[in-house]
Length: 283
Image (cartoon, one colour):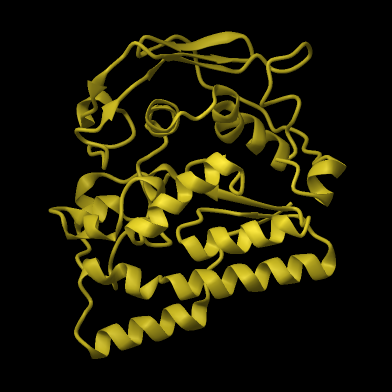
């Protein structure tokens, strides 16, 4: 499975130079550098190359409607193309760069427009996109916000801990996402695409008993002090409709009611991507 962060370097570097000439290097211009055209050209190119050699492809952190369209068109032809979004691309927009400490909303590629954001949930609901995942590189607030321009911004996003709550709140609670589809986009599809299914991504005899238990009676606003990834969160004040209450790893309770119950640990897993996933858009 070919996993790709796709941006067109020529377009992005040209945009940086143009913005510098125009004196528009503030962080609020990030989406003009890492722009929609870059995503369109890079997605179309790498999808075409993958089709030419017969390779399945997983396009990480889709951020623009053009990327969604390229994936949808390829899957419509029967090509094994899979797309991933991050929770913040389905909620925030480039307008958030203008907020105080706007850098906390940024990772690469950039946030885009409301139209681009809304296309993410539309595509998850109708099946063009396959996963809602994370790409977390956590720093503290001082490091994350010390860059003030498109030239010195710090990438990385504190979003791992919020992923399940955001996915449930935005997908199930607000948009009526089916619970089976919710499990698919947060667990089963990733396991299939990355060759870990059925050891991971399913509750079945012989599979690892990995479980994330969500308490759907929780209704509260999230604040940085509720979390553990960093000393800030872009989701400060966000109202959740569910919250993880227990995490089970291979049958062992690791976390329960915010208390760590066991030591961390793990092992390398053997991967095998099924022929269905390799040869057609199977999830």
